[in-house]
Length: 289
Ligand code: NAP
Image (cartoon, rainbow, N blue to C red; front, side, top):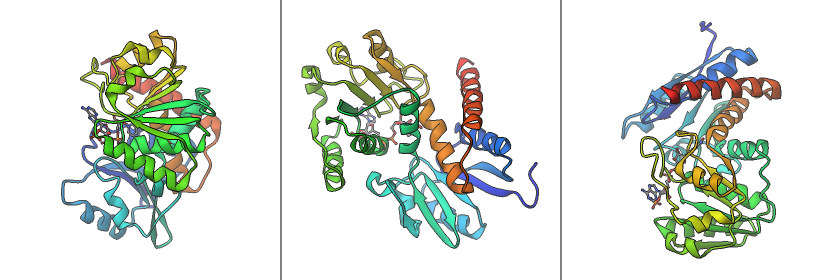
């Protein structure tokens, strides 16, 4: 029950109405017995600075930040910690005393999802399609996981090149940027991450990779999209025999990581499993409507 003692957390973004974060965080709060509540704040264009001042003024305890503010938020923080600096995006703000500190938990959520699905990137040649904020999170995971080679492709090649340059400052990584047209000549790709919005509901028949040859060598295909659960890209990969992973696990576990930072606790694995199952059940119900 929300009382005068309940601490308030939220999501800053636009749009936020369809977000599943309130469902996840309020369920985690109940299951872990934390006296907190989580709500969404739609922040209109040009108002993000006001929202961040409000965060401080109203003594909110923490927020998630989503599209389109994951980079802009960095100007309002006292410190950006960990991989968020390399990724160049913050999705979680934590009040630490009088300071506002930014983290990126997207990569933590995706890594946990990969681990739970038994995906090991060590020694693999990995393709990343797209070069936005989430592609940067994927690239960091690849660099930390000891991939043999990272192959990146993006509509705007210069963005993929700047990720490669940034990674080279922090990691020893064999990185190659290729054009989408050149994808069809590759026969060495073992894992592929699809990080663009192509194929997202309602445009579910769209796919950035129509060349069937690309799928033939894939052992694992990951799509960060979670609606639909199986994108056209994942369906093609599955038909070719690859293991597939969608974005639902990333979505859930980035929230778990944010929650743990805010409340300074570790959520028991059994509680995480229980909440994840409830989350998947709720998503299935919502998507079948
Ligand atoms: P972003 O920073 O806006 O980057 C989007 C990328 O997709 C860019 O590289 C862009 O290419 C490319 N792209 C967009 N539309 C395209 C099109 N029509 N044709 C070719 N390329 C196109 O977005 P993001 O934050 O990385 O998110 C990307 C996807 O990941 C979204 O679908 C989002 O839902 C998903 N995501 C999922 C989770 C999760 O928890 N599961 C978390 C974060 C993101 P250009 O560089 O050429 O513009």
